[in-house]
Length: 295
Image 1 (cartoon, one colour):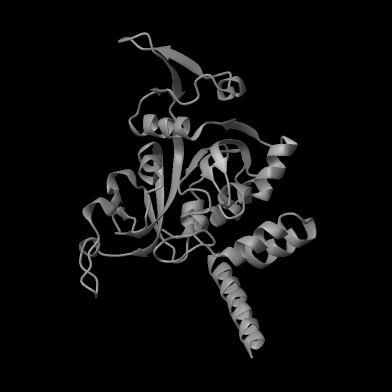
Image 2: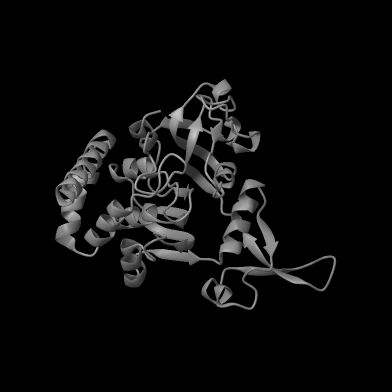
C-alpha cells in the first residue's frame, strides 16, 4: 500500500495503537499521512513521542491512553505538554507495567490481566474506572488491568515481505508485536520490502538475522507500506539514529505559533516525497554550513 491508501482506511472516532517507544522507531510516515486527512476524535494508545505531539497539534486526538510521552533526549513533547496542561484531551495515564499488561491482555483476547503494578498508588485514584480482583488461589489482590484493544495498530519495522511478515534488526522490539496482535487491523511500514527468503538470508558480509527477529507474522498484518526513512525523525536502528538536530527544530518550533506554521508549511503540508525532499535540503544546508565553518 501507499501511505495515502493506508490513510484512506482510517475513520474518525477510531482507537489507534501506535508502536515504537518515545522517539524510537515510530511509524512517522503513517502519522504524517494521517495529518493530511480530515479524521478527528481519535483515541491514541501509545508509549508516546512525536507521534502523539503531532496528532495533538493537529487537533486529531480526543483521548490519549499512555504510559509516558517523551522525545527521549528532550524530556517532554511540547505539543503533548500544551494539550495536557490545557485539558484539550482526555487521558488515561498508566504505570508502564500496567500499560504493557493491557497490551498483553489485548494480544491474548482477554478482558483484563491481573498485575501488581499500580497497587497502593495514585494511578488508581486518577483512573477511578480501574478495578481490583482477588486471587482465587491466595489472599492476594491485584489490579485488573483492562485490555488495550484497538481498531488499528501502526508499527514501523526494518524489513517486511509483501505478505506482511515483519522483521526488526535493532536492539528492542518495543512491544510492536503486541500492538499488532491486539488490533482488529494492523498496518506495517518498513524501510524495505524484500522477498521472504531474504529475511533470514546472509548479507554480503555473511551475517544473517536470527529467526527471533521475525517479530510480526503475516496473519496479523492488513497492509504493508514501504517507507524508506519512515521513522524519521525518530530512530530506526541499525538503519539510522534519531535526527537530533531536526528533533530540536521540531521542539523549538512547537513553542511559537508563527514558527510552528512555518514548520508545518515546510515539512507537513506536502506529501511524503515532499517531506523527504525538505529533510534532505535541510541536511544539505547544514552540511554546507559546517564545511564553510571548518574552512
